Length: 422
Ligand code: UDX
Figure 1 (cartoon, protein in one colour):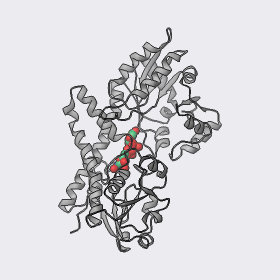
Figure 2: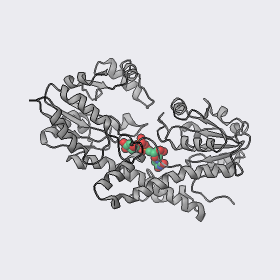
Figure 3: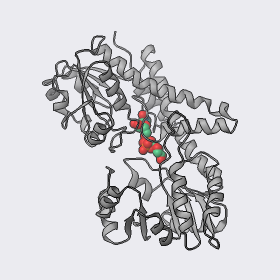
Figure 4: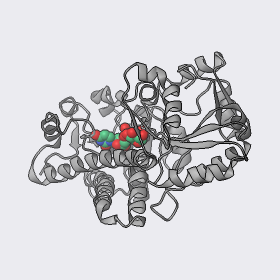
């Protein structure tokens, strides 16, 4: 927003994060963010505060961007962070304004929050709510924000919509499609998009399961399916499946909300999408166990990758860490490498060993697991790695490594969704 020319005040309750941000330091790894942050902080366009009251008196447009994680012990989304922001913001408003939700929420939330906002705002202040879901991908956050595929805005009046068109003027001028709709359609667009993406991944992973027993190859299948422009190749990579803070919790929250709305049957398939996805993690553990001669006891397992996907240090619901922790629990010594996520991984799963280079992670390994497809793993020298392992066996759980090169260097390579060697 600051880069688009607006004066921005960013608010968070975490003082350490605000301190770092004020100095132009991002509290997480995201390509391109450090430069953008530094330039906008230096220009004075972007400032930070821990006070919601400061924000309330500062702006005429307020974006709520807080998380909506899965509730413990339930499929539903935890909306308490949004509620807290609204309760802090609304009574402190000093002028008419627009509050815009960016968070992913169950359909129907925005309508309820709009009423709550009007109720909490001081007398004489007109505060409206709009919903503008965020579609950015981690690892491409800057690119997706400055050049999004589309903007979706749920608004209750043409005036509110006009405010957001004004906010996004530079993007609209560069041709970004802008879709105006009502509040529920805007909320649902995000949930439906993530459900579709998760379904596409689980579809190809289901095909991978079939390929393994039918002697077919899912990589070629993806390529061949993806050439059909109606299908498309993106999100059709079979392997270890999806993780992260969004797809899994969003499909579960959708199941919970659809059940409340009495249409559970319509999204029942998402349950299976989720099950196929967790099955991939178990499948990788099974393949690794097979390579370890049936038991992990006394085995050294090297794990390449801890982040839920490359180009991020986010380990929330990371398939790689789930596999690593499961194998550790079955008695192996597990040593994990990741180019960016080691610190977060150590906090999340402290009882794994961590190594800050790939060679160290693989020293003495009986099986190497390639679980997150960082570029540096594609460029590994299989011969150099072979010299340090105890047994040259690798599982390419992302179907990305140059198979032949590894085989020529003497490695046994198992990929996902290919015929199981007899
Ligand atoms: C997702 C949505 O893409 C984004 O629009 C939304 O705003 C937030 O959730 P993100 O969680 O950053 O974004 O990651 P994404 O790139 O969608 O990948 C999700 C997971 O799917 C990763 O674990 C990735 O490894 C996996 N994936 C992706 C596959 O297993 N196969 C694929 O073909 C693509």
